[in-house]
Image 1 (tube, one colour):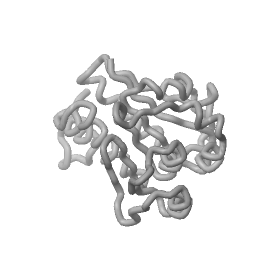
Image 2 (cartoon, one colour; image 1 turned 45 degrees about the horizontal axis):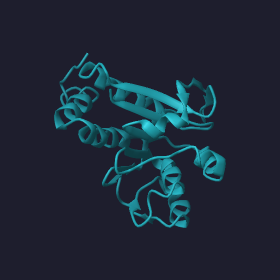
Image 3 (tube, rainbow, N blue to C red; image 1 turned 30 degrees about the vertical axis):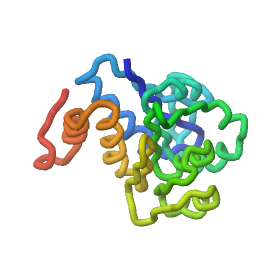
Image 4 (tube, helix red, strand yellow; image 1 turned 120 degrees about the vertical axis):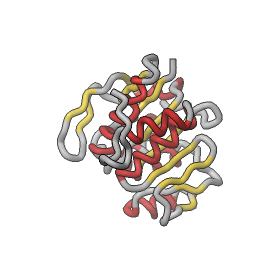
Length: 192
């Protein structure tokens, strides 16, 4: 069984978590064994817009996931300063697909997985990412290197998840999932 984890925290950006959740769960129409979990450090995390989100488990579940997705939001700035939080992750970019939206890249960088690599993020996090020793590609909405993908701008999640699904499965799964959310005339595939 393949497993994806979506990491949330207090003050997460709503669309990042919910768009990734929706897109990844569309895989279940092809692979009923695929498991998607939203994980955090608490049973409930509150979004930047004030929405409470129940988690399905704790962040340690990322350590054996096939795909790990970090959302963004103002809360990233606090958790990257928390050594005990970061120590709970034992990720392996040789064996896992690790990806982030916008400021979620700060978590990946703080975990040490972007040493010698370049990445992208939302403009409000450019300097913070540079301060973590990462080359920032300001004009790219998606940067992938090996099994690590970073995206900038909430709707870039479509391309980021597409990239991750192609790595995890194949181009057909990616195309079917992405086509199912495109405006009429651009997609035309219904996987339900």
